[in-house]
Length: 554
Image 1 (cartoon, helix red, strand yellow):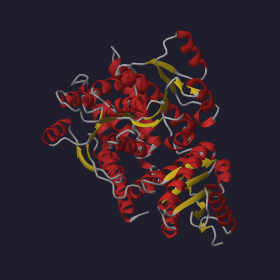
Image 2: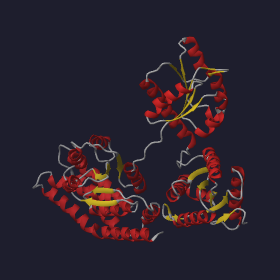
Image 3: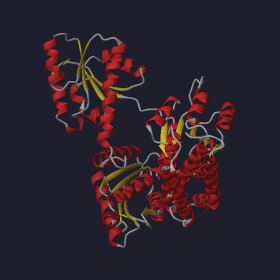
Image 4: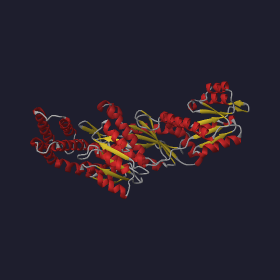
């Protein structure tokens, strides 16, 4: 754990201790509201205040991982809500149950272990603090009337590289937004005497703004009514307390990062160079990347290197026709799903239909209006990008899958050899992962895998490629990287991962990984460097695990 994350963890512990210290006074306030309600001198106001106070206790205690206290408060909140919605005064049974809930709250408060539930929060802080070096800091405005939850969120969100300004009152937030709008707002939904106060104030803030501020709502309520209210107020996301801070900050990062989408890649196959360039110009003016091929016999090399999202093909070319070429391309497994759109002057509908039966996806007739060409290409290219993403990503971790990682390795090696640069390839494998699944169950085992995947992705460089090779095995491609720098990075990853504590009911545990790394200058191709890294990985396992070894130096 870095100095920054350690300091944040200490701050979080101090906030938690302060919250626990004031719990008896908070319970006293709840009982005072109940006593005023029993006196019946102020109508329903004390009952509404009782409901609000219990509601606040429920959300805050859950956020601090005090699950038993939160569960008792939840039951008390339901009881108060039942009385609020009833047309008749509560009966003797209702009062007896409420008194029992107070007694249980008092008992749970008296038995709270200040350290229980801290491990997971500290773990999140460690990963967050170490995973965001050098990132541009974005401004987040946080509005929550619960002081302790607000301080806790401030501490945790700031570790992800955000600048935080927090407010206890919606009106304070509105004033700050008018003076200097933030990059994103985190807004509580429920405020005293205002069940949907958060959405109400956000509608006012967003009203008339040319560019609405991205807003994430947080609430103890997960009902469809609350969610719809947030949507109407322009919500970008909605989280139910207790919050998964890692997921919250991942969402904040997405909302504040303006990544320009990669342009569609269109290959145009046409024996007429000028016509091909004309169609290329139309598509390029719409923001697409194009590659023209005038000789069908030369299509294979650019097809492999360019990796098109769509192929725009003439129907008739000297010596060949589009239908034959489409069939040949479709017989290559990697390109079976790439959309092929015919662009031809052929108007015979029977021939057009025959062309579609032999591998085509659409038939466009020359001449074609530019807007029609662009719209037809965009629809099918976008679908291809989505399909390709689903095909190349591991569903659990979101990393590249085995096949895609190997393809990226081939491409990276070819690039490194052209540029005469070094490249390193690492294989990572979790140590004794089967015992984790056997001891703690597969869901927790999956969480370990996801944590490692996220940690690697956060810590590597932008140009590095991370993939899941299968099971508990991961691969990292490090272009333009010396073996010394690779070893340093991988050891930092190894040490950080070993320091993470995973929560399993009433106990915590840690995991380690072993790693083998090989360099391109020693191995000439992807198969050899893969085998070298694999050999080093098994040597690390044999030598005692939890280490990084270099192939060729064994």
